[in-house]
Image (cartoon, rainbow, N blue to C red; front, top):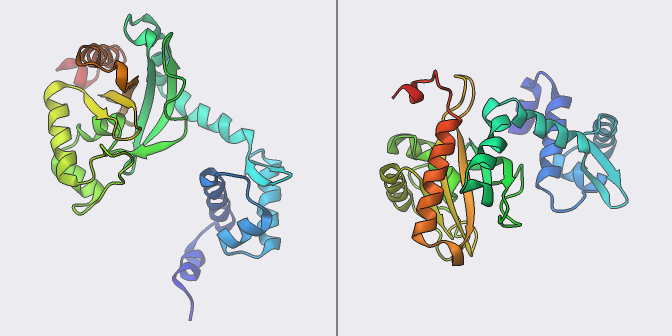
Length: 264
């Protein structure tokens, strides 16, 4: 009797492409290079089939072979940069931060909502910014990160629950993490009232995040979030408020003047 995976693959119009995408995803999530044998097991394929996939992806620069196994290739970095650069607001983001008296000294990041996660696309490192933060291309649960909350706050509570699930339980990344939907909805209500979202050491111990949402420039562009990471020891309420207002000013500067948001 055919398995569900077999039935799905039989309906797949391009199985080799799907397998290649899965292989790239495996390497993206791996903490070290993966050997050919490990990749074959991960994919549920014969080593010969996996080797053919690796040869094609290696030839295209999508993966590279090392003494320890396969890892993502430099072409994936080029594609990631090209994805971010196609959005006008990300191209202008750096100069807007540079001109801001407040943001020019901070670590500012741009994120997009990808399912129930905040995915980080760009970062500006100001004069006194933290030498940490979320690496480009990485993700955090939207429910716990300031950027994710800023994006979720643009939705209704019903839309948020539909996205994450009414019975969702969030990971306790720190002892301060909100783990329930009720706690998240309360945080989103507060974010809507004050105009910016807060992550008070909920995703990283010792780091406070402040973020605002940014509508897409064109109707086809996804909404984005602008966020700042501050060391908890430096995150007094005055600084948090200044950063929150500076982010709102930056979002206004990056909003399409002909959009519905700008005309409100």
